[in-house]
Length: 333
Ligand SMILES: NC(=O)c1ccc[n+]([C@@H]2O[C@H](COP(=O)([O-])OP(=O)(O)OC[C@H]3O[C@@H](n4cnc5c(N)ncnc54)[C@H](O)[C@@H]3O)[C@@H](O)[C@H]2O)c1
Picture (cartoon, rainbow, N blue to C red):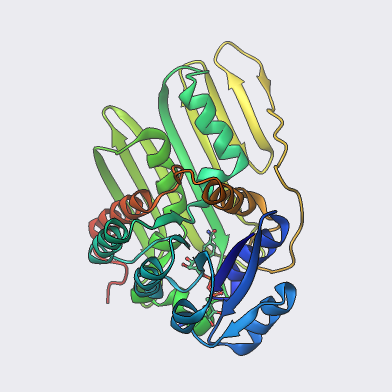
């Protein structure tokens, strides 16, 4: 049985807690949160011990895995300490805020040999896993163009308003939009150019971004926004134009439209179906279950964590930083 220390018992900590509960061969034995009541909520579920801070857990808990669900600006210092203490570390996305942090994380991983997975969960989301498979198999030929989007109402749950503080979250551009940019890189590799336009709030913080990436003569558009009205439904999807068909994920689900006529809706059975009641803009364990099951199983079997390793998380952050530089910063006064 692998023993997990879970740091940060907010929105994502609750999600990871529900996933670990559903995965065999792993148990949460220690939790940490500066808000005692949040730590208690999750500790009760697992009968886990409680630490007042992440650093105290890293120093003292007897665990095989440390899972970091802290606000992004706290990832690096905790991840560096965690890698020095245990062999297996999971860090939520975006892995870090800037290039210097990314370099320190990679250097520490090299020195310690730690296994590190980043929460780039779209790499594990069923419909996107399907898309990557049809792309890899060239089922519909080459990609001619693609569009990805992720749009939500304003996230209101964050502790201490860290999510809407640009130097703590990197803004919507780094926090939400990184999901699609990371997936684009996973599927298509590194782009050769980008242009970006940002929409900002009254404080000058990015709330929406429209980016066009180029791959030779091909274009990929990626849009992110998190300040639609409260009742706006969470919307994430793609539209990929291959030579022989266009594949779409939207509110109607997955669909394939053939160039020569006709269409069908691929059926995908989730690996694990269960609702959770932790709030936020998510309604099932979805890819979170898949990514943590992969993480736990591969650690148990001594296999490399190849799907979303640390170096990939860092590359995706660095690419978003180029978008942010293009538009003049996460916050423009
Ligand atoms: N993969 C996804 O889809 C997804 C979705 C949401 C958030 N996230 C990421 O997960 C991370 C956490 O986000 P969240 O939404 O859960 O934030 P949150 O504000 O809900 O939770 C963060 C928690 O950390 C606690 N905390 C703060 N400092 C601490 C410390 N020193 N020691 C212990 N606990 C401390 C806070 O009390 C809070 O409970 C962020 O990096 C975010 O970008 C990922």
